[in-house]
Length: 500
Ligand code: BG6
Image 1 (cartoon, rainbow, N blue to C red):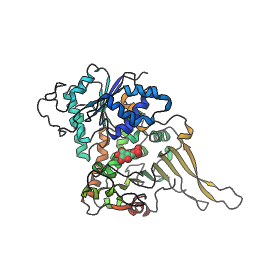
Image 2: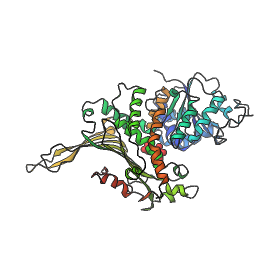
Image 3: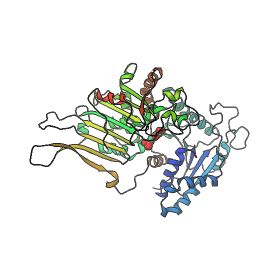
Image 4: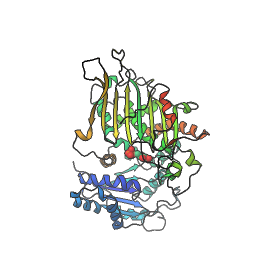
């Protein structure tokens, strides 16, 4: 069926996320025929650019991702792009400063919604998507002002980028403010990890194959490890990162989403609510980590300069480091537990960090030892779901090394590489998610109760960290995190999965 014609209005439209992810994803969607011919992309920023300036900027920054044989398609895509200047920074606390906006004649329209209103006028029958890739404190005010300017139509949707708030209370407030203008079914809260192919494949692997589900429980599984390791540091991001840290930036959203998909019960249908209902139950079953347990079950680290790489405090930034910079964690490891029948007693170890020695995101399910071993030297089975760099699924099984002498065992991989098995181009996460927004399918987006349940578990850890006098444990840039991260597993005789 034919895609609807849509106007996609991107706040933060000239920012880093837009240029690196959203615009390329929209171009690929266009190329694959998933944008109707009349659809438009309208970037909002305070940049004062004309359409031509903006197209030139996109051409300069994104063109190297365009295949040589698609120059005509690229020119057509550039033609869909528009730019509207809006004073996004102004009065973002968002009180109604009297009179509301006037839809375009200046006067009380201090932020400048009038120009957007003129561009959208006459297109009320189209799908309209407001994509807020702006700081979370702007979400409520922008939604309200768009509504006051008469721009929110029945066919409108709103996309909220992470982070959704900085704790439970702020997340609830944002959800209330946005919810006052949009119905829950119009609100799409993005977690781009849900758009990654392997993440969707995890559900297929679990629920479209018969062999795993019977052993997917505490009887057979020893523990689960979820790692998102990055080699990059945070150059130029200190302003954001000082107040985020790894727990808010990666764990509250990406890692907990991976945990829910690993641990959830089989839903009865693949529809939007059935899957999300099961995910919420996992978050609600997370055992709270509070008080003195925070010290036992969580680790925080900050990278220091090593091997020519700067430490967090020495990264280029527009302002000098502050006390918040010294206290923020660039690495964290947590031992979580899902308190329900299926998972009681199975640790879920979460870990993420900047400036680690490799870029790798994966879920490792470590099975228990065989109940009775007749061979020396066995090792437990392990299932590795690799999200990146290359996407694949690997099951480590024990095999006999060929030879006529004594039986010697070795773990060998049964391996599925998506790149080698499927010839189709693997779409970027944002491509899949933008397609779903345009189709109105929220299955891969976070529902209000999900986001809030995640914060409810994170909040006590944040509070305990804030009250600790110690700074995060230092770890040299380019290493696998502080000693504490290894002790977290080591004290129960376990270790992080490290080999390539
Ligand atoms: C973002 C975080 O949500 O995810 C970044 O804000 C992080 O700090 C990024 O680098 C990682 O995404 P990916 O897709 O590269 O694993």
